[in-house]
Length: 352
Image (cartoon, rainbow, N blue to C red; front, side):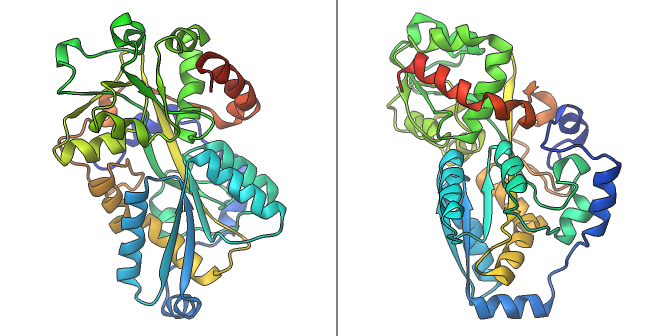
């Protein structure tokens, strides 16, 4: 499959905006930009770019190194944390008129509603985004675009769990045999898990989380962590965790396996935006365009296991295409007012 199957994703995709007549008119006034020799020269004079990201550090740093190799003389500083921590850090800095970040990316689509509302994002549309990205995968006003997508999946360690015994559904995680054997990430830290908690609480009810909280679950922060706990043999099953880390581990020979739950699997959209007060505006503009290049998007897919919106990216044949997975979508505009309630309920059931 070439990237994400558009008919599959766009049929249910609930991104942060709708493309009405006003949005179309404004979008047309934001001229796409190309990478020119003048932009490259100006970026090299600035010498560095700072990237705040929620993508796993190993993947984000590979992207940074690829940029440095393509544009010698410009250093990429990767600042990686969970989506909610990225959001908090940027909010604290901007609240104090501190501008350290050039480009920001998180897996919580709500953040980009807020960043745009606060006026922190520049209107910048890389030529490749203008040409190739589906309308529902980019802001009509040109403030951000979908850099990646990934799933929050169940998974297990194949040396500890036989395939026929592995959970096939979220409800299977409530079986007493998994008590003390499950690891799970936290919605207060991870945007992926916030998205997943939102859609699963609607699909399964909060009773599911209340019962799961009684399973003596190992609680970690980022969605990148549960797969690593499986790999280390510290837990047998993950209740959630990102699909792309599972891909990376499995493809490197680690005994882990992904499960796409029968009730459905949450999908998270990771947006990226260029900050209006970027301290390195030209390097930021060059790096922002680089993130959406076919070469970079293919790197994200090949090395990082991320799903891409670029129509010419080709996924590995060993990976299950999204067209064969029942996906659960979150609407950021409806999620935004529920965030504090979700955190409160989660802490009540999991004690953290």
